[in-house]
Each structure stands twice: as C-alpha cells, then as structure tokens.
Image (cartoon, rainbow over the protein chains, first blue to last red):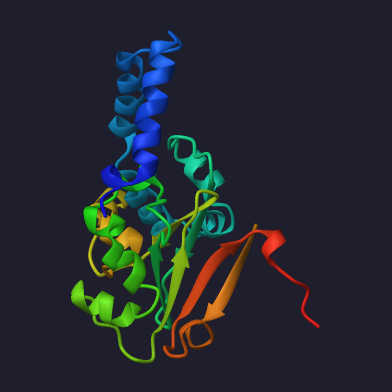
Amino acid sequence: VSHEELPVAARVRRLEERVVAAGLTTDEELDAILDGLLESASPLNGARMVARAWTDPAYRELLLADGNAAAEELGMPSQNYLLRAVANTPERHNVVVCTLCSCYPIALLGPSPGWYRSFAYRSRVVREPRAVLAEFGLGLPDDVEIAVWDASAETRYLVVPRRPEGGVTEAELAALVTRRGLIGTAAV
Amino acid sequence: VYGVRFAARDLWGTGSHTVIVDLWESYLEEAG
C-alpha cells in the first residue's frame, strides 16, 4: 500500500483544504514550506556527519552520545525528534526500519527511498534481516550480529558505517557514503 | 519512551538478530 492510498493521506488532504478555506494559509505557503524542507534535505548531510566521525574521535563520541548536538555542530537543519547514531563494528551491523510507516531523518538522508516505505521491507527486515540485506547485495558473515532499529516519530536513527579504504580528506570520505549505507542496507 | 532490545528468537521464535523498538512507559510492566 502506498502512502497516498492510506486513510491518513486523505485526512491530511482534507485538513489542508480546511485550513486553506479558513484563510489560515495558502497552497503556495504550504508548498514553500515543503520545498524549503526538501531543498536542504540530502544524504550529503548525513555523509558529512559520518565522515567527520571517521576523522575526528571527539566528534564520533559526540555523535554516538547525542546525535542532535552532533547535527547542530555541523550546522545541519534542526531536528524535532531524538536523533540516535548507531555505529557498525566488525562484530555488529546496524540496520534501520520504520515498521509502522516511514519515520526517517529526512533532513540528513534526503527523501526516503521507495523500498524503505514498502510493506515488504518494513515487514521482512525485522524478521529476516540477513536475507533482506543479502538481497541488497550485502552478505554478512554468520558471526556478525545484526541489530534492527525500529524508528518512530520520537526517535530516528542514522547508521555510522565502518570506515572503508580510500579517501583522505573529510570531503573525499563523505563522497564514499551512500544513503543506503546510512540506513544500513549497504556497507558504506 | 524507552528503547527496548529484544532477541529475535523471543519475538518470532527464530533468528539470531536483535530488534530494538521504542516503547512508551505505559506499555511496560516492572519485571519480578
């Protein structure tokens, strides 16, 4: 079921119509708010945070302890939820899902991919993450534990992949980080 | 809100991974 078909989508549309009809706002104003949000929303933001964490141990510590403060330190758009960063290690791989809908730190990862919102991903990755990750091309050894983090409106997650080979400067390292890596369905 | 870690085996009866979910305090009962 796509989001557009859900009852909540129809309720949101009716609410929009009512606030516009009541003269509280306009379609143009609502579009401008959405455009502003999406304009600055990019996986490059999350990639910058990860690259900084790879090169600056103090920043890594801050990121893992207080994701919101770490985002703010790099001048990222403010978050109205608890941002929690979870770091991959040789022993543990993290992957993020929102089983209820599609909660996700849009400002740091850009608009969510279709598969992230799909029922198949949301229902399967909590039950058989190893198989799902293998389908994404990420085969993990059996001795690597997988932690599945179920996001909510209150708490959203950012995966800190393991630092790959290559890249020297922070910008070069940031260019290696993908949106899938930040969700946990790719190694980086 | 608490982040609660479950072993997949306890949730689904199978699997070696863990699942961490947000649970509001009202959903939790004191153990023992």
